[in-house]
Image 1 (cartoon, rainbow, N blue to C red):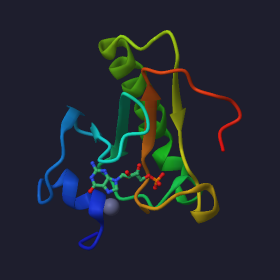
Image 2 (cartoon, protein in one colour):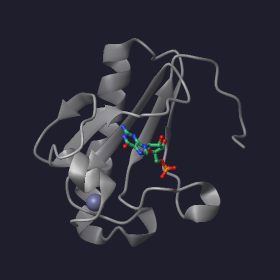
Image 3 (cartoon, rainbow, N blue to C red):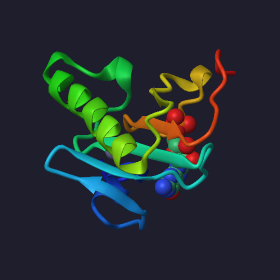
Image 4 (cartoon, rainbow, N blue to C red):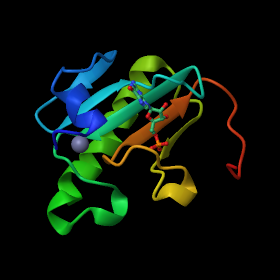
Length: 113
Ligand code: 5GP
Ligand code: ZN
């Protein structure tokens, strides 16, 4: 998708602080962090959001969660972290390229706002 912000970050056309990359996902620090660790794990395939994900995307969705767990281990935040998909504008989704938030490094309240 030529006009997608996260596709441009994956392509290296817009700079981002890369945390992890493999053939399926790209992970980078959020530009406006909501916690000491706030990483976005993004499939390289352009998928609009979780509700648009299809059966064939099952693998990359599971992989994204395991990448989040690996980053959390590396960051030493395993005493408490959260993985979040905001789905749809009403839940706060503002970038319409699927991305998993990894948040940690501070106490996290429940329920979220
Ligand atoms: P959403 O609100 O869609 O769930 O999450 C989008 C996230 O992308 C937000 O947390 C926002 O701070 C982050 N974001 C938006 N634009 C950029 C950018 O240009 N670079 C980076 N690294 N993060 C961005
Ligand atoms: Zn995209």
